[in-house]
Length: 142
Image (cartoon, rainbow, N blue to C red):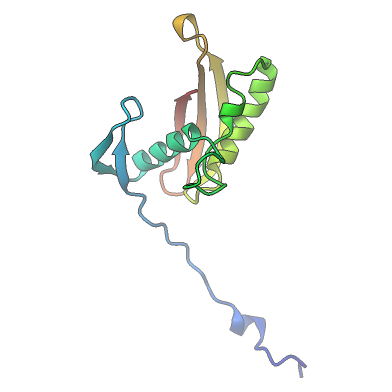
């Protein structure tokens, strides 16, 4: 006979099923800054979240939690080597995205510098493994 008044572990356990909520949001044009009247859902909403999380500076806006945003702006404009960029950009972008429930993993980063008139731009493409939308490639310009 057990000394604990609690029920056995099998009687206390509760089975939890994961429910994915809709990710519907208003469309946003990052080029013009205009909020659209239409809504997006699924992979389009996830792509929009990824871009917005990367372009939003972390710890700068009180409306967002400390988990939201990216610290990439701390690297941009600094005189850092290509090797440091290759190491830090994947880490910073993964930290910005992985906390979202829809994203399982962020991997396969390809980073290249712009040329000509866009020499100060960085083109970053990466693979995103998501819960509901499978695997897809996302590219952002930083």
